[in-house]
Image (cartoon, rainbow, N blue to C red; front, side, top):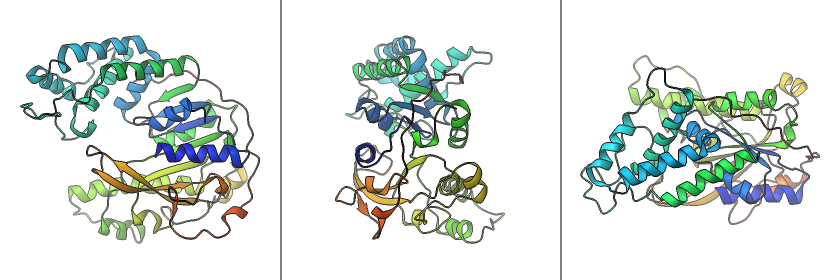
Length: 366
């Protein structure tokens, strides 16, 4: 998806007056898209945020405590991961169970979470940080793939030092431990010099859990049963997140946005999700917050996944939805339409010029 988003932003620069000063990833995860856009010069600055303390603390530590994080990761590699075998699995158990001790210094806790995040991501099946996945190679380490097969020590150090460089030069504005709503709500307050049109949001939320019964009840006539099983309750909680995000993007978002999902028909089947072709701000949001009625473009983008991905090996479609100017969103073999979009090039676009973003400190520790 990173390549597709790079194409969109490059098109927006060439075919409109839109210029992205700040690129915001509220579901940062691995942040590969933001880092690629920075390295290619397509955006000036990025802000990363994630509600998961492990993920947020990794990026915070890489930005602010670069040398110390590099040293700790190098020690983990040399002492446990590279030798492999039972000591490496024991260390995996240690990090799986690790929690900050009561009263631990905030910096020490942040570094602990950061090492935990990287260690588990590199040594756990599919890179899963939470849940039931075990160490790569199994507990006996009898597999030809050892626990350290995905740990590339030189590349990890290079990436961590690159993050530190981006932060020290002001290109990585900050890393926030916040959920998506708090991140977007706090943008204006913490960066008052930015005009809304200078910011571009990229949202890659968690997978949308499927449940026919859940969609019928939630999207048509919400009436949850008292006797829902645990799986159904988790699915309802999952969908609630997606409905809240869709409501915000359809009605309240002051900034242009790009959204990517594993493609499912349910995403565009209801106006409660992404069935609309245009943002529909409420009166108060339009009049007092300046929310626009931007056109919403939708495309299918084919992605090639490895066996360790959440969808399994092979080529699969992702759904890309955006309020970038329609003339910046191609219709071709890479960006395939869901349906005909007559008149898409006739949508009037506004001047998107603006000034640089303001730098703030990495102020919220774990």
